[in-house]
Length: 242
Image 1 (cartoon, one colour):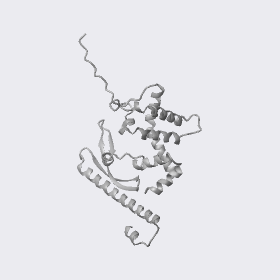
Image 2 (cartoon, one colour):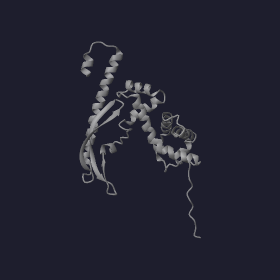
Image 3 (cartoon, one colour):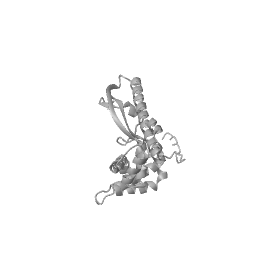
Image 4 (cartoon, one colour):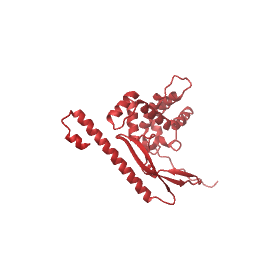
């Protein structure tokens, strides 16, 4: 493709830019596929073969900021401590492939941020034009629903704590403090609240999410572990014999 671009007759810069962008995205897809499959082969060679039984390769596709990447990775059967057999992908675990469905975290973040500024249809157009990945407005909406589902457990717990007048604790909802991404978490809650808004008076998801957003926004400092706030808890003094 690069050869055809170079040998092509003079075109507008916009057209040239679009063609080079497509070429770079295609190249990135090929490189990513090659690297993922090489990593998978290395993990297969270095694994504990008595613990992980190779059950063959499976094809999958991940949607990235530069387009869809299809690759093959091995699935393994292993046993849990309770004796149950489960299937795992060592590649996913080793690379911490935290995906939203089949969408990469980077692409999901771009879509989520675009939705905060534009309607779903416009978001889909922006992502499709500026990334190597095409997405429909329905696809953007579905992604936001998945993001909402991922925070639903934290939302339910925190709303109950708020109504009880209690502060959420790190040990009970640790995801709130992961990498101190509070602003990102709050933005997801806001997006979720907007996306599930309904005229149904029995549907409390949006109102609960908005209450949660307001409560957490006003109590950011209290969400941080006491160590990060510079608070020192005095050590308990040993008691004498009674």
